[in-house]
Amino acid sequence: MPIALERARRIVQVLLKAGKEYICLMHLHENIDENLIKKTAEEFVGKIKQLPPIRSAVKRQLRIREIYYLDILEIQDKDVLFKIGCEAGFYVRKFCHDFGLKLKTNAHMAELIRTKAGPFTDKTWHSLHDLKDSYEFYKKGEEDYIREIILPIEKAIEHLPKIWVLDSCVCSLTHGADLSVPGISKYNNFNKDELIAVMTLKDELIAIGNSLIDYEDLTKLDYGKVVDINKVFMNPELYPRFKQE
Amino acid sequence: MNLLPFEKIERKIFVKKESETNWNCGQDPNKRKIEELINYGIINLNKSSGPTSHQVSDYVQRILNIKHAGHSGTLAIKR
Image (cartoon, rainbow over all chains, first blue to last red; front, side, top):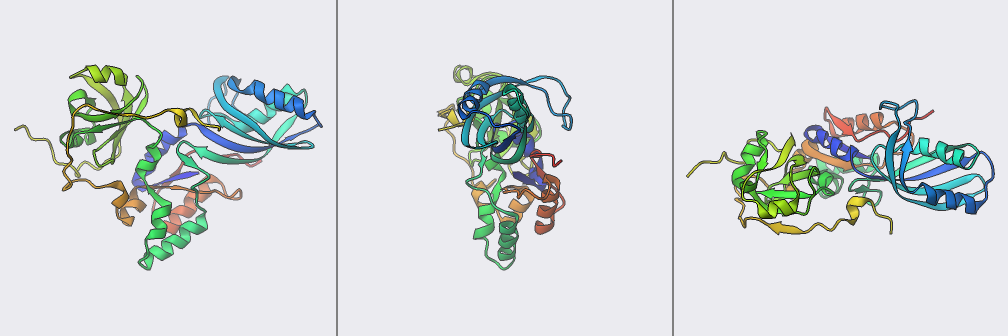
């Protein structure tokens, strides 16, 4: 579970929209043939309709959500352990319920672990105890340990396409200006209307926004808006105001 | 190998305008001071199943002596 600190807090909105992976233990209310469970799992992969559960934070209306992959890891009697990669806003608890109905029985979610949230995976996570220990070490002057645990905000946008801008353009972006072609130094491949991370040439996050064109258009253009900036993260005082020479 | 859509995209880098950066302003994110990270960083936390996401955020605030820590979505509502 990514936790963003103080000034970095708003970055969680980027992670909310990112794909997720879970490992889930589902409990079926009847014994079902293993092959039928596996076959049903395969049928669920792709875009499905889902009604958010009664206790949820969003409006209860049918939504289309994609299951990218679904692997049955183990089946023991009525317990089914699976790994699921899914679009943001997918309810695994509801999925277990729907899975049961498809098998003409009932099922519920028994355990759930999130193993990926955008660029954050279970391979690199730390416990609260690790955090506490590392903070104590840091207070005693040893900072290597805490540096492994508290990551720069830039880690949270690792999965987004990036555009790197000239130093002279950074200040105006931090004041909320949109990004135009002349300010751009380098860029990744990106689509139109995609979430873009706008970076300095030192790989610092400046802001995020939506692309108004795709990268092939950008290759051909000399002027015009490229990114509609919607959230600024960088402190405005870091880079000097651009002076006309 | 199971990958999420963004993990399958190969990100290439294209150059529009070659430019140097001035190292007198800004900083390599990996060289930020710990105080700056505590004020502007992110933790990939392994949330044990007991406390809620909200409680965990609260523990993080207390450990680091800060006012705000935000999590990215609740995992599951305990019945």
